[in-house]
Length: 304
Image (cartoon, one colour):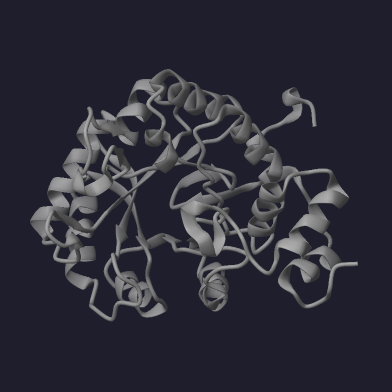
């Protein structure tokens, strides 16, 4: 596909509350790994030029050292890069962020996150992004499955929503009962869980339930699969390769297309620090898979 014809609009749109977003978005986690700041900024600006208007981030997307700050050198925050690259922000841009856990140098991340912690994390996002409000804030649950109540934490975010600091709320790394509980406190516009063609398919029912409730389902690690950030390797590889060859596209593009085919409410947020990979990811939004190809990818029929 010629570069001039590649657009995020090909993936269609969904609404997060009162905001309409392209179903092909961008995840900013990988931006901080590259010390080339100008390249990261170029990736973000190119995403907007390609029609992406949904950017996912978090203040714990930081290098070196991630949340715990382990490592040397000046920290590179994804939120800072977004502000530098995109502010003043386009009117249609929706930035989604996550809060919900505290850093513990001794034991890693902690689930012990008080309403005061959440307020501090929201304020840090506002400051780093240069905003007076946050479009969407997801309450991130650290460990899954967790049977702990989300009422106090989600309620604290709902209070900040009522105060105008947050427009819309979502959940991340959660179970169905968390969604039910949160929905009694404030509207849930999206659920962001670990889900891929070859990983965590136990979330199939939750994905479809979200669609029935009008809640966006946003997979993270959709490209990495079961191997997460180390890369995708699985028993599905032969099927993915066969479909990719049939369409003359990459296996990553097939994974993204499969993700979007799971329902009109499913949003993709692939991340990359490479401008060429970004273009390929956005182009995957135009890839249409047949029912037969989907069956092959799901393993219900063998590849021919």
